[in-house]
Image 1 (cartoon, rainbow, N blue to C red):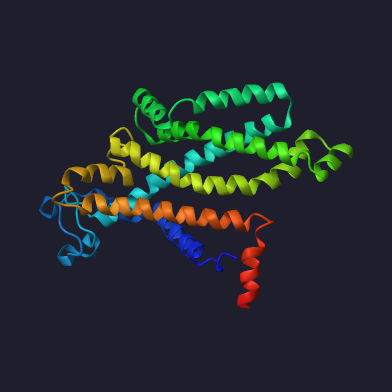
Image 2: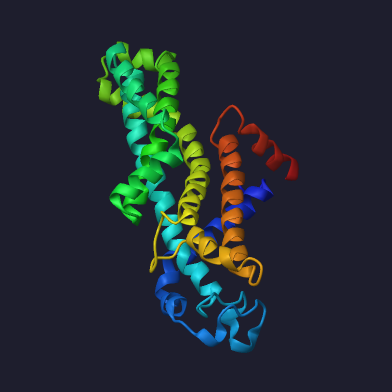
Length: 285
């Protein structure tokens, strides 16, 4: 079904390449990304006189932008993946409790979610990072906290609807335990919705991390992220535009690929809409 949606297929290939950069990039190009060469500072792109690694140009300290983009993918993806995974697990756990258990537990959990949502996410991130200090674990923590209410409220709404279905009522009548009902009957039904939201939220978290790094309160050197590279290239926009352009382009490409892939997942994981992709398959055959 992925092949039937060409945009989603290309997006998946792009994301796989970026993930390969994140996994193998630091081991292969870590030294090149940090080695300084002041003779090549702000070298223009597509000038291969200094070697293929400078095909995208050099930064203000003569470091190859291509190598830094590949190495920075690890930190950027690690922050986004860690924040989304943490928010998904915690939000889904409390959402299942709020949706399946009694009214009292639901009210307490939802009020806590309302308290978190009452604070602007970026403002909360700025305050927490200022107090704890900018680092990858702290960045994951603060971004996860701001995204938990989304998964919590979505999970609760889905559970409230699914628990009234006939197969859940049948499991209750047959004496199934609450744990079995939640894990074996309810969670598999709402999981596709949560996965689709997580894919889309991955792009938002990545943009939030880039925004914090751009403001100077995100990941700090010697670590590298795409947002930090954009921030470091901001003073040179008039003289060396490529310093901020290439990392910004990577952010746009990754976010666009995630949005296209999440749109495909929304259709492919929904039995009521999956026929659209299957009908394309039968038509092509």
